[in-house]
Length: 378
Image 1: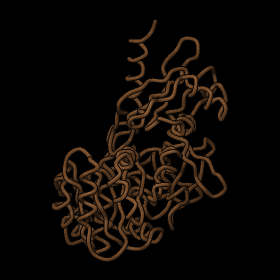
Image 2 (image 1 turned 90 degrees about the horizontal axis):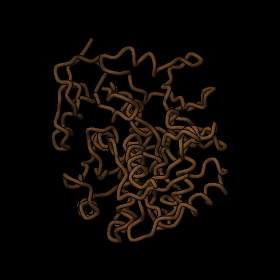
Image 3 (image 1 turned 30 degrees about the horizontal axis):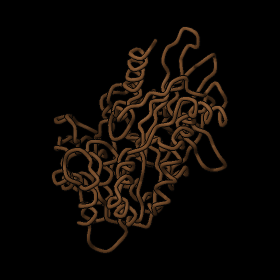
Image 4 (image 1 turned 60 degrees about the horizontal axis):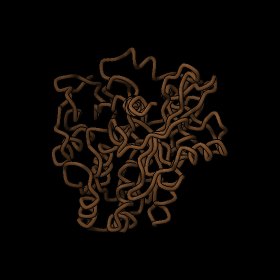
């Protein structure tokens, strides 16, 4: 049995009724992207495009049962069903899930105004949320930085019962800053293939299991897994694997356990090799993010004849602050991780290139850093 897919413009007021029909089975599957006219298995409710951060964009098949399991597990981990503020684009899974959770909770989400994200628009949307029950929102780190830089937005954000934060790695300094301001941040890890976040604050949601393979890659299992990719059985076979008789998603991310808490180290193919030593960017970024004056940071590798790759930190200064010097950056990283991990250059920029909802485009950041070093070479 199959059902058609209906393309719906990525606008909340149009997607909400379409999602309600798709989840209940009274309407066709929904896609906020161009797949109209295609057929999908009968249980599929949503077709969502990945951001393309792992290669070419893919159309992911999410069943109604998987979306319901994800929403129920989120409610169980938080304070139950609630009202949501939508601040993310709905053609990506994180924004789409705000709508799905609202539909299943029987609540009406409030969206920020269309266009670039602004702290003032968030404040206005938060003020428009009325009625009883918990209040939630979902953000990416770049948005959180902008809200914390605005006193009125920080006050509005602190009134939420939970702020889900995902889409990209978050430095400990940003988390400390948010929590010191009274913001109830819940870090999330997941992807389109898991209906969005499925690990909250390093611990799997109910029904989700996490394991690491022999290479340290993260494998995820549970009722939130996608059925596969639209028209790409070759990708299905590569991404979804059987381990001990259980279907798992084999992610491209490396992880480590700290007790029962999962730490995501970053993508396996982002690991740099400098002087013959493997350097994952994540731990270096965490150290640098804690330095005074750092708003955001991305660590990339620039080809070098002597070292293979040079470790380079691309830094966005905090508003009105002075970024750290190269000497300060090297000293901090050397003290925590060793000299091999320390950056050889610090490149200061106004903003990091992004792909998708808050995901850093590392290829573009690498090109930005390489051009900067080329222009400033002696």
